[in-house]
Image (cartoon, rainbow, N blue to C red; front, side, top):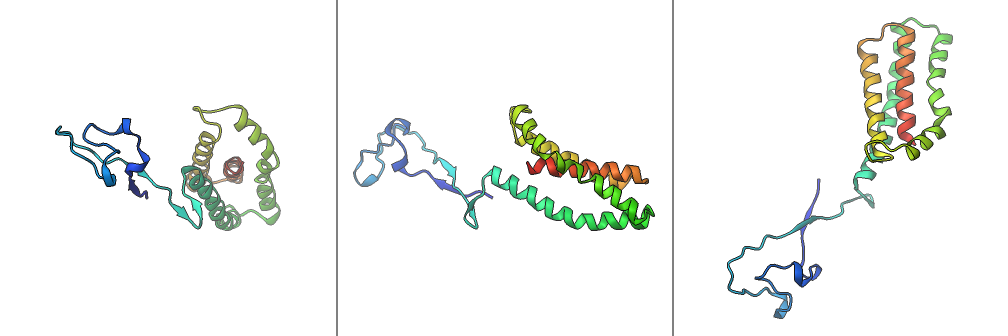
Length: 169
């Protein structure tokens, strides 16, 4: 949601005004110069604050990343029940699968070097955020539709963990 605020006459220099407007008029009122030109008001979005933070696209993207991380904590509970009830894994196998999901977090500094040195589509961070989101969505979609073995589940959990770790950088 954005709010439009009309551009005041104080913020505009004389050269950007149409012929029918002059900023030198008395009391800040426009004067009519006799020409029949219509003046369109210019609107610029104002900054919207939420709990004192500007809602810029970058701040919204960061908030979405951490929201997804919070939601994934709930999903881990469902994954543990899936591994135990549907795939019939014992606690040791469940621990091994969960342990593999921690591997992308161990090499997290490497992701920072990659995103800073190799820009994708002209951006250093945004493109990696988008790709990480797509990778995470793909991993959860695969988990929901095609996974029927412990190896497939481990692979999808590893992809999901990789996407969250990379986007956290």
